[in-house]
Amino acid sequence: SDTHFGKDRECLFSTYKVFIRSLIDYAAPIVYPKYSLSFISKRQNVMNKALKIALGCHQMLSISRLHAETEVLPLAEILSSIISISC
Image (cartoon, rainbow, N blue to C red; front, top):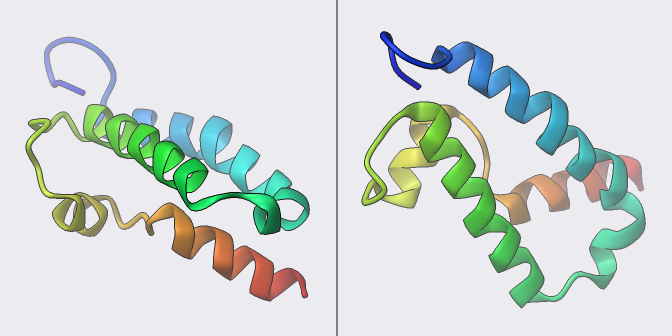
């Protein structure tokens, strides 16, 4: 994200929510119990990279700061909250 080139932060976060988060929310109740820790970890890394791109920050930004800045929970917390709501 940048003010002179590319899309603004809100547009990139909306794109993330529409395409990425909706897939997570839709499939989680069915497949989450079968996810391994390594599967979740790999998807968390991809999610973190996407959020860093949307934020327009350095790749060295700490993960806790990234989630605080974007107000997006880590993937394991998202999945467990979806499962607890659907049960």
